[in-house]
Length: 444
Image 1 (cartoon, helix red, strand yellow):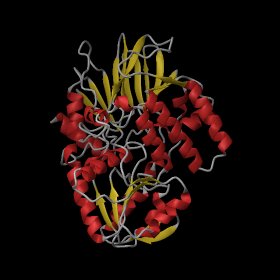
Image 2: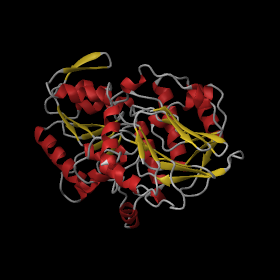
Image 3: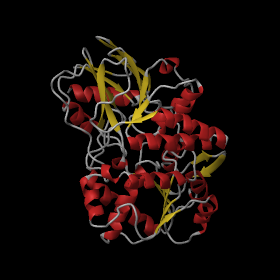
Image 4: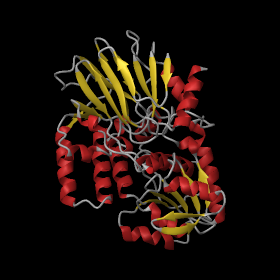
């Protein structure tokens, strides 16, 4: 088995796999798969943070017969508006939750960039006309020139996330997408049941945490969250959680609800200060059939794990600013996850200088993002620039890496080991050091 890092081109007997994005970075996933007489693009992401500085949309991404989305995060769907503007009118495949989430993310991104509401509506109309929902493990239809099949497999990363398996008479390609952690609340585990009748010529594998293990299993997250919350409550300030609206917000609600119901932490107010986070939570409620077994059991017992007493939906901007005036400690979940925009920025500007505040990061902070700068500044109580202002970092800054929606290196190895006869692994979606470390780990 060959394991290649930071390598864009991978030949097949009847085509090739070409990484057009996230070749040596975490964000901006975009992979072109040419096999069986058809050309597919897997994901249409945009890079974030430092990855975006010199990025240009690759022209080859338009030379395709269909687009397949693994999930709805911005770094996997953020280029959709540009593709439409360039005249893209080919089918877009994904699970129904992924397509719904993609529409939400595109609209949110366009709003944040100041787009005219009419342009947003037109973009969504065009997108929805191209969407083709696909069920897990069902051969997708609709590409006449494709002499083969492709199917979506559960990836366990966020609701509706998928790995993609392409099969032609001469090639078999598996694109992992972003892989989640086994045992993540609400979500089913990543697929480990792969057919053994043919070798896997190329496996495109994410490597976000290829250089480390999270250090504890997902079941211990509640314990760690409890410790952080109790310490923060003793200090008497607000707990600010910059959380991605998709996935992380819902996991936090699930865990916080369990801690309160079991009496392990007090019943303090929880504010979801993210219009998009609220929309995504409602979308989760609409796709409960994709929840994992424990969550389904709660629902069967009339216990909704995403709705509880003292949970507040903050929809209006005016109400968001009033949070700073609340004296009682409260947990505030607001986007964006890397502090690149959204309502979390206002909360950080107001509350980072207060030593009683706790900022809890629950996801990866890419190099060059405000979230990474806050983590760095907290070590020396330096200042960080937010929205043009220099803000002193006096708050306690905590990180729960185990709440990451990405598998660690051992979990990546376990997922890969379930695929029979892998010939080549193309690592992507990771910084160069993480890719090299994962390659060494897999070879050992």
